[in-house]
Image (tube, rainbow, N blue to C red; front, side, top):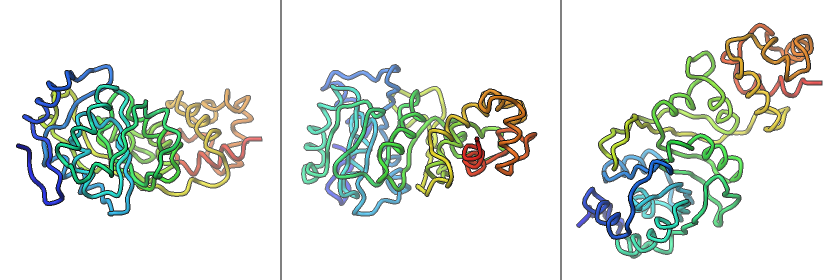
Length: 285
């Protein structure tokens, strides 16, 4: 039963995933964006791409029935599984005890909405997760804000969202999520994930996003920059001078601030990077 690995953790295949769901009376819900991975090769690929070291402490959001958790435990120092569904959170320690009995002390399960995570002990260094599609972006930004110890991550999300988060200035998909993630980290696309590896099969394509934390741009605080980014992209078809008139108090004030920041007042939000947004926020009188 299951697929053996040399690291004393058996992985879940389709039969095990269905059996566990039946045992615990669990049906995946659209409300929580639940699609469980039931392919051992996919979780192995995710863990390999996450580039973890034996010292890494991983936070996994939405562990579900434990498919990815079981692949993470042998390669990390500790795994924090943050699960909003009380039934799934209660079931996970038993599943780990059954499939990876020697690794139970490496797991901490927290039954909580990931957006409410304020701290975890030991402090996580990496996030590796199959993020719920309906809240993937806010969850990721919330974790990076709340957990300054996070150095890197690999997350599975809707492909369209991965494209948006990894996009650079000038791209059609570049927007608010791209800039906000760029404040925290350098991100890149890390490959597609086939629909067939999920139960139930989603009606969207999935992909992997890898990121590495970096220092934020100097000169302005995050809240000020994020408010500016929201204002600039609210009217993304307009040049920054008129688009930021409300934010600056008038179009003339917006132009003055933009010139002081070394940004062309007739540029559009989708053409400038997070560093330029930070300069604009810092230049505001």
